[in-house]
Image (cartoon, rainbow, N blue to C red):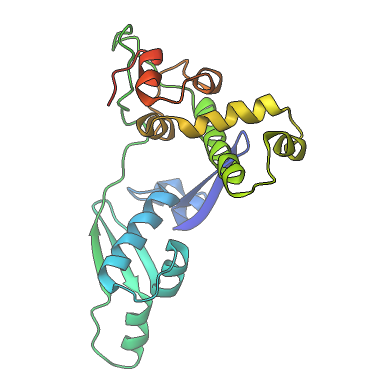
Length: 222
């Protein structure tokens, strides 16, 4: 498979594409034609790290670049060929450097368990739009970064941040308020499980107390 990516409304989506499909030969693409790069890389790194237990900590990308020679994606498993095993084989030494990791491709249209307000019915529940989710998740990240800046840098203020970001201090304060969202709301936002209508504007206006956040949104505390 070949690495590829697509951009939608400024967001980059990485994936691996079947070599046959990449060459325009859709009929020869096989049962697995496209997979999420993040999903595959995370599983590969986790499996290799558990198998080798490297003494020196490293991020997933460095680990894969150092220890992984090849990954074969099959319908029910990943076959990971370790780079060190390839070198040992060239030197005519016995080496068991192949990992077989159970895996299956999740359907792209899998059902999401949406957080449903008490006043809504399951039949009427719709998740937030993907564009809304992307904007919300990016804003939560900015809010946490700016809050950390205010805590660690005594010279930083919402006014100085606003001047640097070329926006008003009110916008900075509203974004920072997202750093106080309850963990399960943040998780639901990342996974796209917030119901339709719970976007940036509504979540910026919540109190800091997690129990009150759920009450104002009509959700049960989890």
